[in-house]
Structures are given as structure tokens and as C-alpha cells.
Image (cartoon, rainbow, N blue to C red; front, side):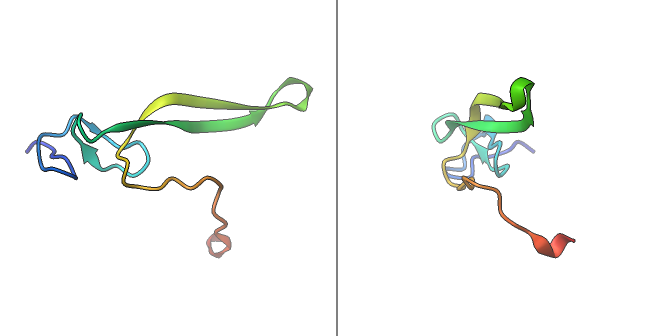
Length: 72
């Protein structure tokens, strides 16, 4: 069974890197994503990113980490 676009139901060409929804080319967007952050030389924070990750445009990636104290 082929994946279908979450928005229009046509054949999907990618899945959103943030939420996993499948989207066709017409309904896909791009957004940067951080894969990891570490402290480099001279105590300078550095990030490993992907500039053009596929984004469905529907989900809302959070700008800051969400606290989840219930996991401890």
C-alpha cells in the first residue's frame, strides 16, 4: 500500500521530519532541524543541523525543550 498525503490524499513523496505525516510535493515545506548540540573548543556551543528538512507545515515544532519531570 502506498503512502498518501495527509492533506490531499494524493501519493506522498516524503514524510515530515518532525511529526511523521506523509505529504506530497505540493504540500511539503522545508525547515531547519537541530540534530544535536555540544560544547566545542573554547567552551563554544555548536550545533549539528540539517537546513532543508521536510516539514508538513501542519505540526508545530516547539522552539524550546519541554520539561517532563514525570519521567524521573
